[in-house]
Length: 211
Image (cartoon, rainbow, N blue to C red):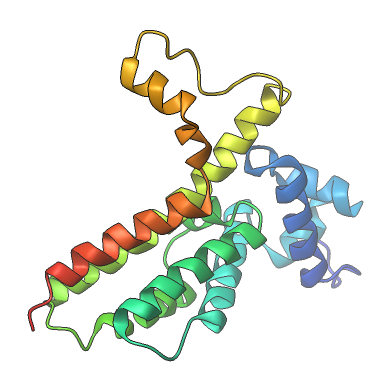
């Protein structure tokens, strides 16, 4: 490790990390590739981040803070959770592979604060603490996994050269074939599909709230 503070800053390392994640995906995100991007040696990176996992944790924490800053402050529990889901999705799309980063990191203070903010939105309801925790966890996991699936589908399409149909052959499956021909598979990864899933979750929560 360098004895002096490196000439490159932590902010530049983080910015380069986002560029790499955007250009190469999380599968190819390594300290070696980061060094190449910044034209530095590994000890320079390790001055700020003792391991790749520490860097991943830093990026995940940054995303949590970004989400918290845009969460709605007004509205009833349903309005705020619906808007929050859209905010979280938008932020995860803005920061490449951030859904995967959240999955690969432990829940530190920033993520805990995000969870606390979401729980506060549903706190005034008659739900039990177990229900509140469960439903907020379901909502958050839905959004994260939806964005990760968007990414994975995009990677498959790229690997096929954007030429082949990634949905396969439905000739033996009558219902699937009919739905495919009707364009239903175009819903995958769409705003409409995302919104319908959120509404389904919110409707389920609302049914469990006693007057």
